[in-house]
Image (cartoon, rainbow, N blue to C red; front, side, top):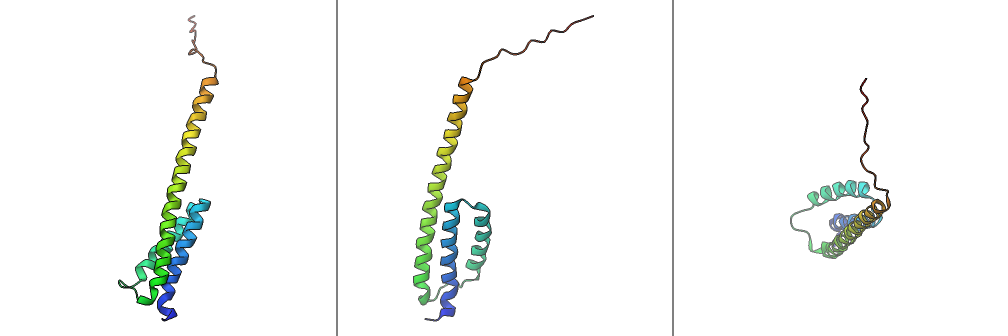
Length: 109
């Protein structure tokens, strides 16, 4: 097992771990920048990874699955927050006084 052979796969796993952290903190700007780094790293990998990269790839796959789950969790939280904002808005409108449209009297001379 050559550390030079496994290094990019270890780096990939670390990038995905960092993505997971950023999803949790909702730092979407940093996440977008990290996605660019991840894409470049993946593009640099050979089509067939060396056998020694298997542990790092397994870790990366697990982290990726956790990131997918975290994205779904954050999405659900955002949907719930949005529904709550709409509910609060409807409630607030229900307490607002209802005014008839203003009638402007036009005086002619």
